[in-house]
Image (tube, rainbow, N blue to C red):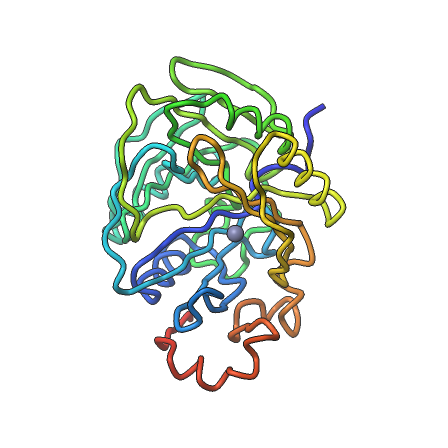
Length: 313
Ligand code: ZN
Protein backbone atom coordinates (compact mmCIF):
# COMPACT_ATOMS: atom_id res chain seq x y z
CA UNK A 1 0.00 0.00 0.00
CA UNK A 2 1.55 3.28 -1.09
CA UNK A 3 1.50 6.16 1.33
CA UNK A 4 -1.23 8.76 0.77
CA UNK A 5 0.34 11.35 3.05
CA UNK A 6 3.74 11.54 1.38
CA UNK A 7 4.77 13.36 -1.74
CA UNK A 8 5.82 16.84 -2.77
CA UNK A 9 4.98 19.57 -0.24
CA UNK A 10 6.07 22.67 -2.19
CA UNK A 11 8.62 23.76 -4.78
CA UNK A 12 10.53 27.08 -4.56
CA UNK A 13 11.99 28.99 -7.48
CA UNK A 14 14.00 32.15 -8.18
CA UNK A 15 11.97 34.61 -10.26
CA UNK A 16 12.41 38.02 -11.86
CA UNK A 17 9.80 40.75 -11.47
CA UNK A 18 7.19 40.04 -8.74
CA UNK A 19 4.26 41.63 -10.62
CA UNK A 20 5.00 39.62 -13.77
CA UNK A 21 5.15 36.52 -11.56
CA UNK A 22 1.78 37.27 -9.91
CA UNK A 23 0.09 38.05 -13.21
CA UNK A 24 1.21 34.72 -14.65
CA UNK A 25 0.50 32.38 -11.73
CA UNK A 26 -2.76 33.99 -10.61
CA UNK A 27 -4.26 35.38 -13.80
CA UNK A 28 -3.00 32.92 -16.42
CA UNK A 29 -2.62 29.63 -14.50
CA UNK A 30 -5.42 30.38 -12.03
CA UNK A 31 -3.59 29.56 -8.81
CA UNK A 32 -4.48 31.33 -5.60
CA UNK A 33 -1.97 33.48 -3.73
CA UNK A 34 -2.01 31.84 -0.30
CA UNK A 35 0.89 33.65 1.35
CA UNK A 36 2.66 36.92 0.69
CA UNK A 37 5.73 37.36 2.83
CA UNK A 38 9.36 38.48 2.57
CA UNK A 39 12.48 36.50 1.76
CA UNK A 40 13.83 35.99 5.30
CA UNK A 41 17.40 36.26 3.97
CA UNK A 42 16.62 39.56 2.20
CA UNK A 43 13.49 41.26 3.61
CA UNK A 44 13.58 43.94 0.92
CA UNK A 45 12.28 41.26 -1.50
CA UNK A 46 9.19 39.05 -1.50
CA UNK A 47 8.57 35.37 -1.00
CA UNK A 48 5.30 34.62 -2.83
CA UNK A 49 3.31 31.40 -2.40
CA UNK A 50 0.62 30.15 -4.80
CA UNK A 51 -1.49 27.02 -4.36
CA UNK A 52 -4.93 25.56 -4.93
CA UNK A 53 -7.97 27.08 -3.19
CA UNK A 54 -7.30 25.29 0.09
CA UNK A 55 -3.54 25.79 0.09
CA UNK A 56 -3.07 22.01 0.38
CA UNK A 57 0.35 20.36 0.65
CA UNK A 58 1.27 19.17 -2.82
CA UNK A 59 -0.11 22.28 -4.49
CA UNK A 60 2.15 25.17 -3.55
CA UNK A 61 4.70 26.72 -5.83
CA UNK A 62 6.68 29.54 -4.24
CA UNK A 63 8.93 32.24 -5.67
CA UNK A 64 11.77 34.49 -4.55
CA UNK A 65 11.42 37.38 -7.03
CA UNK A 66 14.55 39.45 -7.63
CA UNK A 67 13.84 42.01 -10.37
CA UNK A 68 17.57 42.17 -11.15
CA UNK A 69 18.13 38.39 -11.32
CA UNK A 70 19.95 37.20 -14.44
CA UNK A 71 18.39 34.67 -16.79
CA UNK A 72 19.20 31.10 -15.67
CA UNK A 73 20.53 28.24 -17.78
CA UNK A 74 19.22 24.74 -17.02
CA UNK A 75 21.72 22.07 -15.98
CA UNK A 76 22.02 18.65 -14.36
CA UNK A 77 21.78 18.21 -10.59
CA UNK A 78 18.61 20.33 -10.67
CA UNK A 79 14.86 20.12 -10.88
CA UNK A 80 14.33 20.14 -14.65
CA UNK A 81 10.57 20.57 -14.92
CA UNK A 82 7.56 21.07 -12.67
CA UNK A 83 4.29 19.35 -13.60
CA UNK A 84 0.78 20.46 -12.65
CA UNK A 85 -2.19 18.12 -12.64
CA UNK A 86 -5.24 18.94 -14.79
CA UNK A 87 -8.32 16.77 -15.47
CA UNK A 88 -8.26 14.45 -18.49
CA UNK A 89 -9.53 16.19 -21.62
CA UNK A 90 -8.21 19.64 -20.60
CA UNK A 91 -5.31 19.90 -23.02
CA UNK A 92 -7.23 21.63 -25.84
CA UNK A 93 -8.57 24.25 -23.42
CA UNK A 94 -5.06 25.06 -22.22
CA UNK A 95 -3.59 25.18 -25.73
CA UNK A 96 -6.24 27.78 -26.61
CA UNK A 97 -5.59 29.69 -23.39
CA UNK A 98 -1.82 29.72 -23.90
CA UNK A 99 -2.20 30.81 -27.54
CA UNK A 100 -4.50 33.63 -26.52
CA UNK A 101 -2.20 34.82 -23.71
CA UNK A 102 1.08 34.41 -25.64
CA UNK A 103 2.45 31.73 -23.30
CA UNK A 104 5.17 29.72 -25.06
CA UNK A 105 4.22 26.03 -25.21
CA UNK A 106 5.67 22.95 -26.92
CA UNK A 107 4.27 19.97 -28.78
CA UNK A 108 2.17 17.73 -26.50
CA UNK A 109 3.77 14.34 -25.71
CA UNK A 110 2.62 11.09 -24.14
CA UNK A 111 4.84 9.99 -21.25
CA UNK A 112 4.07 7.04 -18.96
CA UNK A 113 0.66 6.97 -20.67
CA UNK A 114 -0.15 10.55 -19.61
CA UNK A 115 -0.83 13.46 -21.96
CA UNK A 116 1.77 16.11 -21.21
CA UNK A 117 1.75 19.72 -22.45
CA UNK A 118 5.12 21.47 -21.94
CA UNK A 119 5.18 25.25 -21.48
CA UNK A 120 7.27 28.00 -19.89
CA UNK A 121 6.66 30.78 -17.40
CA UNK A 122 7.85 34.39 -18.07
CA UNK A 123 11.27 33.59 -16.54
CA UNK A 124 11.78 30.54 -18.76
CA UNK A 125 10.98 28.01 -16.01
CA UNK A 126 10.01 24.67 -17.56
CA UNK A 127 6.48 23.69 -16.62
CA UNK A 128 4.05 20.98 -17.76
CA UNK A 129 0.37 20.20 -17.55
CA UNK A 130 -0.25 16.48 -17.05
CA UNK A 131 -3.76 15.16 -17.66
CA UNK A 132 -4.98 12.90 -14.91
CA UNK A 133 -8.06 10.78 -14.43
CA UNK A 134 -9.59 11.03 -11.97
CA UNK A 135 -8.13 14.42 -11.04
CA UNK A 136 -8.56 15.73 -7.51
CA UNK A 137 -10.67 18.81 -8.19
CA UNK A 138 -12.01 19.22 -4.65
CA UNK A 139 -9.58 22.02 -3.79
CA UNK A 140 -9.70 24.06 -6.98
CA UNK A 141 -9.86 27.80 -6.25
CA UNK A 142 -13.46 28.91 -6.72
CA UNK A 143 -12.54 32.45 -7.83
CA UNK A 144 -10.08 31.04 -10.34
CA UNK A 145 -10.14 32.78 -13.78
CA UNK A 146 -9.75 29.34 -15.42
CA UNK A 147 -12.86 27.27 -16.16
CA UNK A 148 -13.36 25.04 -13.12
CA UNK A 149 -13.53 21.78 -15.09
CA UNK A 150 -10.05 22.39 -16.56
CA UNK A 151 -8.37 24.05 -13.57
CA UNK A 152 -5.04 23.07 -12.01
CA UNK A 153 -5.56 21.17 -8.76
CA UNK A 154 -1.92 21.13 -7.67
CA UNK A 155 1.25 19.28 -8.62
CA UNK A 156 1.33 16.06 -10.58
CA UNK A 157 5.05 15.91 -9.85
CA UNK A 158 8.48 16.96 -10.97
CA UNK A 159 11.42 15.79 -13.09
CA UNK A 160 14.93 15.79 -11.64
CA UNK A 161 17.81 15.85 -14.15
CA UNK A 162 20.73 13.88 -12.77
CA UNK A 163 23.90 12.18 -13.96
CA UNK A 164 23.72 9.68 -11.07
CA UNK A 165 20.30 8.69 -9.79
CA UNK A 166 21.02 6.06 -7.15
CA UNK A 167 21.38 8.16 -4.01
CA UNK A 168 18.41 10.41 -4.86
CA UNK A 169 16.33 7.32 -5.56
CA UNK A 170 17.37 5.85 -2.21
CA UNK A 171 16.35 9.00 -0.36
CA UNK A 172 13.01 9.20 -2.17
CA UNK A 173 12.22 5.53 -1.54
CA UNK A 174 13.52 5.18 2.00
CA UNK A 175 12.75 8.57 3.52
CA UNK A 176 9.99 10.13 1.39
CA UNK A 177 8.20 6.76 0.88
CA UNK A 178 8.03 6.87 -2.91
CA UNK A 179 7.84 3.49 -4.70
CA UNK A 180 9.16 2.42 -8.07
CA UNK A 181 6.30 2.58 -10.59
CA UNK A 182 7.98 2.27 -14.01
CA UNK A 183 11.28 2.55 -15.81
CA UNK A 184 11.54 3.44 -19.50
CA UNK A 185 14.93 4.10 -21.08
CA UNK A 186 16.59 6.85 -19.02
CA UNK A 187 13.42 7.76 -17.07
CA UNK A 188 12.51 6.30 -13.69
CA UNK A 189 9.04 7.04 -12.34
CA UNK A 190 8.65 6.98 -8.55
CA UNK A 191 5.21 7.44 -6.98
CA UNK A 192 3.24 7.67 -3.76
CA UNK A 193 -0.55 7.47 -3.69
CA UNK A 194 -1.09 11.05 -2.51
CA UNK A 195 -3.78 12.98 -4.40
CA UNK A 196 -1.23 15.67 -5.34
CA UNK A 197 2.53 15.77 -5.84
CA UNK A 198 2.69 11.98 -6.10
CA UNK A 199 5.20 11.58 -8.92
CA UNK A 200 8.91 12.12 -9.36
CA UNK A 201 10.69 11.33 -12.61
CA UNK A 202 14.44 10.79 -12.39
CA UNK A 203 15.91 11.63 -15.78
CA UNK A 204 19.37 10.15 -16.08
CA UNK A 205 21.70 12.19 -18.26
CA UNK A 206 24.90 10.79 -19.77
CA UNK A 207 26.90 13.97 -19.29
CA UNK A 208 26.88 16.66 -16.64
CA UNK A 209 25.64 20.03 -17.85
CA UNK A 210 26.66 23.04 -15.83
CA UNK A 211 23.65 25.32 -15.40
CA UNK A 212 23.61 28.95 -14.35
CA UNK A 213 21.48 30.06 -11.42
CA UNK A 214 19.14 32.97 -11.94
CA UNK A 215 15.48 33.61 -12.64
CA UNK A 216 13.84 30.37 -13.62
CA UNK A 217 16.09 28.20 -11.43
CA UNK A 218 14.40 25.88 -8.95
CA UNK A 219 15.94 26.66 -5.57
CA UNK A 220 14.63 23.59 -3.74
CA UNK A 221 11.93 20.94 -3.67
CA UNK A 222 10.16 20.10 -0.41
CA UNK A 223 8.58 16.79 0.60
CA UNK A 224 5.85 16.14 3.14
CA UNK A 225 6.20 15.12 6.79
CA UNK A 226 2.94 14.43 8.68
CA UNK A 227 3.92 16.42 11.76
CA UNK A 228 6.93 17.47 13.81
CA UNK A 229 7.51 13.97 15.19
CA UNK A 230 7.56 12.54 11.66
CA UNK A 231 9.87 15.39 10.55
CA UNK A 232 12.29 14.53 13.37
CA UNK A 233 12.27 10.83 12.37
CA UNK A 234 12.78 11.62 8.69
CA UNK A 235 15.64 13.96 9.64
CA UNK A 236 17.25 11.07 11.60
CA UNK A 237 16.97 8.82 8.56
CA UNK A 238 18.67 11.45 6.41
CA UNK A 239 21.47 11.74 8.98
CA UNK A 240 21.84 7.95 9.05
CA UNK A 241 22.42 8.02 5.30
CA UNK A 242 25.51 10.15 5.95
CA UNK A 243 23.92 13.42 4.86
CA UNK A 244 23.86 16.69 6.79
CA UNK A 245 20.38 18.11 7.32
CA UNK A 246 19.90 21.49 9.00
CA UNK A 247 18.27 21.75 12.41
CA UNK A 248 14.46 22.05 12.39
CA UNK A 249 13.54 25.59 11.26
CA UNK A 250 10.20 27.20 12.13
CA UNK A 251 8.76 28.78 8.98
CA UNK A 252 5.51 29.57 10.86
CA UNK A 253 3.29 28.01 8.17
CA UNK A 254 5.31 24.78 8.50
CA UNK A 255 8.48 23.46 10.14
CA UNK A 256 11.25 22.20 7.94
CA UNK A 257 14.76 20.87 7.47
CA UNK A 258 16.98 21.24 4.39
CA UNK A 259 19.75 19.07 3.01
CA UNK A 260 21.78 18.75 -0.15
CA UNK A 261 21.50 15.42 -1.96
CA UNK A 262 24.71 13.80 -3.24
CA UNK A 263 23.32 14.30 -6.77
CA UNK A 264 23.20 18.06 -6.28
CA UNK A 265 19.56 18.95 -5.60
CA UNK A 266 18.55 20.91 -2.49
CA UNK A 267 15.80 18.96 -0.69
CA UNK A 268 13.57 20.17 2.12
CA UNK A 269 11.21 18.19 4.34
CA UNK A 270 8.24 20.25 5.60
CA UNK A 271 5.35 19.47 7.94
CA UNK A 272 1.79 19.49 6.56
CA UNK A 273 0.67 21.88 9.28
CA UNK A 274 -0.13 24.41 10.52
CA UNK A 275 -0.54 25.65 6.93
CA UNK A 276 -1.09 28.96 5.17
CA UNK A 277 -4.49 29.74 6.73
CA UNK A 278 -2.88 29.69 10.19
CA UNK A 279 -1.22 33.08 9.65
CA UNK A 280 -4.31 34.69 8.04
CA UNK A 281 -7.29 36.23 9.86
CA UNK A 282 -9.40 33.49 8.31
CA UNK A 283 -9.28 31.12 5.35
CA UNK A 284 -10.80 33.66 2.94
CA UNK A 285 -8.00 36.11 3.71
CA UNK A 286 -5.08 33.80 2.87
CA UNK A 287 -2.34 35.76 1.10
CA UNK A 288 -4.16 39.11 1.29
CA UNK A 289 -1.90 41.02 3.66
CA UNK A 290 1.86 40.91 4.07
CA UNK A 291 2.86 38.29 6.65
CA UNK A 292 6.05 38.91 8.61
CA UNK A 293 7.66 36.50 11.07
CA UNK A 294 7.50 37.88 14.65
CA UNK A 295 11.19 38.93 14.64
CA UNK A 296 10.59 41.15 11.58
CA UNK A 297 7.23 42.56 12.74
CA UNK A 298 8.84 45.53 14.59
CA UNK A 299 10.39 46.61 11.26
CA UNK A 300 7.12 46.34 9.28
CA UNK A 301 6.90 49.99 8.29
CA UNK A 302 10.42 50.10 6.88
CA UNK A 303 10.02 46.72 5.15
CA UNK A 304 6.74 47.71 3.48
CA UNK A 305 8.30 50.94 2.25
CA UNK A 306 11.19 49.10 0.61
CA UNK A 307 9.10 46.41 -1.12
CA UNK A 308 8.00 46.95 -4.71
CA UNK A 309 4.21 47.53 -4.61
CA UNK A 310 2.31 44.68 -6.28
CA UNK A 311 -1.33 44.07 -7.18
CA UNK A 312 -2.94 40.65 -6.99
CA UNK A 313 -6.56 41.28 -8.07
ZN1 ZN B 1 10.80 25.58 1.02
